[in-house]
Length: 173
Image (cartoon, rainbow, N blue to C red; front, side, top):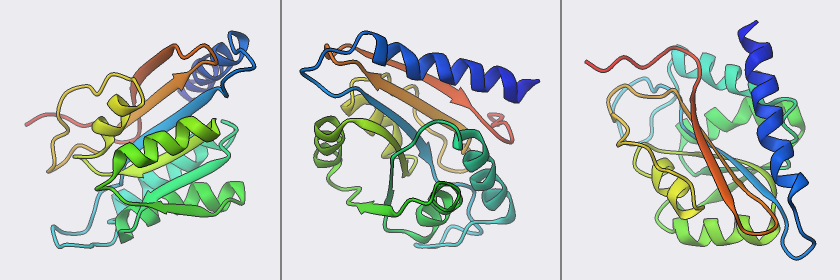
């Protein structure tokens, strides 16, 4: 039942920008997530079992979202978070520089369409804001992995954003 509610909700978010779209600008929908849980705090760790489960759940949630492009920073944990969705949809994962988020935001706005962007605790809220969405509060670096931002930009330039939670719930300590 929860999956059905989430799907209906997400479909309404996708269709709203298309209804108000002018021919001057391409509509844009961007799904933004932080990578899944990692095995340790090293520089470039693998995903833990919980992180792999979260990545698989993300792919299941987004399989009918019409995603056309997938973007990941060049770290094992982000690439592995994006991989199940890419495999399910038959898409390649394009790498981006997490130190140049304005360039990625500009690129997304220029090409329009539906995108999944996998980033980090310090880049995901910033990316949401660069796209015109609400960044939400700071992500807890230690154990908050359940945010799913959806930012939509209609053809007239108006922006809507929302923050959902998915998978094992983050509980502040």
